[in-house]
Length: 285
Image (cartoon, rainbow, N blue to C red):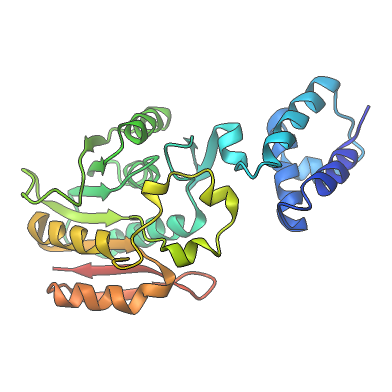
């Protein structure tokens, strides 16, 4: 019978050409913890813990898929985001820590505003991680979310049910939506596609080969295409003094600020992530 340590050695050997050692060890811990239904802390504390054969068979099946570069979140079918669990599949992006920072910024900002934020809209919702996390933490607010993909919206609706929140999901294409919506929003947030083809060259194949391209990539000659469309949409659909939040391409922070200035937004704040990269923008009308 093999131990946790044996499996760790196997993962390091089999995945050496795909990931670095730190990532391999993390994937190993995630896989064992999931299949053994125990904590990563226990696994790390007891490397000689023996694993039954049925667990080993499942872990080996996971390892085979990991060797292709497939993300562990898609293999397991779920990901953690802002303390909540979300179903994920190839129709939606895997939620990331950078986006958690955006949610945290929104929540801290809402808490400091004098007036109430009543209506929130998430554009390009994907798995629904932003909209659902905001609704979970702001239960008195009305939260809506837009996405072009019917499959993504199906997953987002499942995630709303999983996390016991009510979000109004709308299928729409923000690039072709030109008329105001019936509701005006106090806050609009978006983590739109922003990866250029040049950026793609630097990305891991577990992103470029598996995650949905429509949610990731933008034309090289117009990398801010979604920011322009959303800023125009926000100009028509935000309440007076309403707020707009973006996650952004770290290489296009100043350009995104300039775009918002040109569209008459004010109080524009560019914020860095923990790695010191331009990652988020807040602006108001």
